[in-house]
Amino acid sequence: MLELITKIGSSVKQQILWLADFVTMQEAAPGFIAFILVVLLCVSVAWYGWTCFTRWRAINWLFELIKDYDTPQKLSTNIVEIDQAVKKRWNERAYGELARGWLEYRETLVMYGEDGSRFLKNSVRPSTFFNTEDLNFSPGFWRIIPGLFVTVGLFLTFLGLVAALSSLDVANADTSALKNSLQALLNAASAKFIMSLTGLFCSIIFTIVLRAGMTKVEAEIHQLCNHTEFLLKFISLEDIAVDQLNAIKEQKEHFRSVGMELVAELGRPLREELPLTISKSISEAMLPLVERVTEIGTQGVGGMVNDLSTQFSEDVGQALKSASASIEMAGD
Image (cartoon, rainbow, N blue to C red; front, side):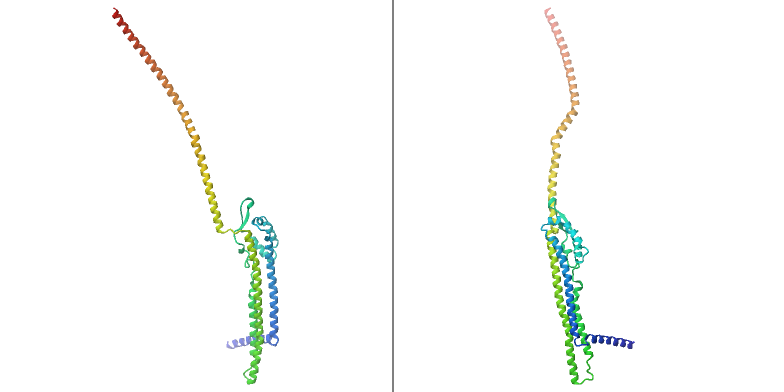
């Protein structure tokens, strides 16, 4: 088992030394590798620059679509035209990401106002949809490129040092030979550090380019969001609270006027029509009774007069008879 482990270790060691010798076996190898690193830097900068330019151009295209509208009413009137123009670029790479973001943002717009003063407001801020992460405009893989340059430079440098150290023989060398070997080692090491220095240089340059490209893209996105928010006012919680308060005040005045009108309408029949109706109803209900009472009273008074006149006549007659008799007797 130990022998197998030893064989595997020796084989791996030989392979690493062979790779180190292959990479740095020539004196010009560090310079050639440094040149390759610089070429890769130029290719990476050109490629990343073109990527940033296409993204910047797409963002600027959407900004140009809405830049000419200076009021929310104008943008609300022509919003359908913007939607159609955006949908035409749906299949293009950078434009397609912006088109998707715009259509998602379009779903958050709410119509406000009445009649001719109607305009759109956004219930979600544009930066929620228009940012480097949601638009897939973030650096992504490009973030690791500076680290790769440094890593590759250090890796090749250490390979060169390993190759130089493996060729150093101090066991059978005298003082003069050992001194020459150490001097050769230092010269080789200084040459190998060129690769690390080049990798570090490429990392610094690409980091600057990476930050500059992202700053340009983020500035365009920020400009787009600012102009969009200027045209489409954001519906904040404070705005909703103020609208609700105004609606409650309007409802309060409306309910008050409705209540007063309702009381007035209910009171008018009570003041005007109800007394007449009650009087008429009482009159109609009492009329037969009054007529009956009148009839009975009339009949009773007539009978009483007849009785009184009859009785009075009889009494007067008897008195006269008595008076005549008395006069006759007196005459006799």
